[in-house]
Image (tube, rainbow, N blue to C red; front, top):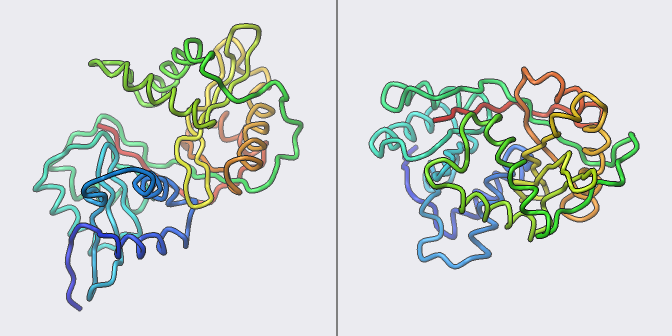
Length: 279
């Protein structure tokens, strides 16, 4: 069969959505990207979506941007995409997606893109579609704009420890603050306070295809190991299922045993394995 790599258009984006619908938890980020395009004004809306086509039918895709994300890629598609990426040179800060797809794509790119700053080879994708059986923490609430000043340093601390570099470095502070404010305004940011101090926070980083992907889970260092996280996460799940989406998901490094235990206690189940290559 004849195959080609080309940018998606309004017709082929519908084919991509059909692929997403087969596994919405796996493809939540991509679904959110498409939803954002549909809600905005873009001259060339799908320029960051490459497709691998067989006889005109979309089989695989690659999302370009700050994150490179493979979608339903076969071995042949990954080889073809890698050729395109090698010609372009690295423009992203990470490659993220299903383990088998990211691992092979990185193997094909390592010589020309390397070295990576970090490779998180095994990250457990977990999901939940019903309220937790444990008692939620009723003091967890939606963040408001009044919380931004207190919330911002907590977000910076979480990001820095999780990703390994500060989001405010090299002049990135205003953009990162705007992102946090955007999540607050769209009711995708959750906190628990003790007086004026934020002691727990989490956000929904991606929302698409009926899935809300949780990110940025953080507990103040003084409150870790005291049983705060599980009831707080149970509340976040309750908010998400009631207000945002019928499924909540997240992914966590396989070596983060305390976090995995917490999420399993809340009721999250492992449904997939992701990998992330960080630059």
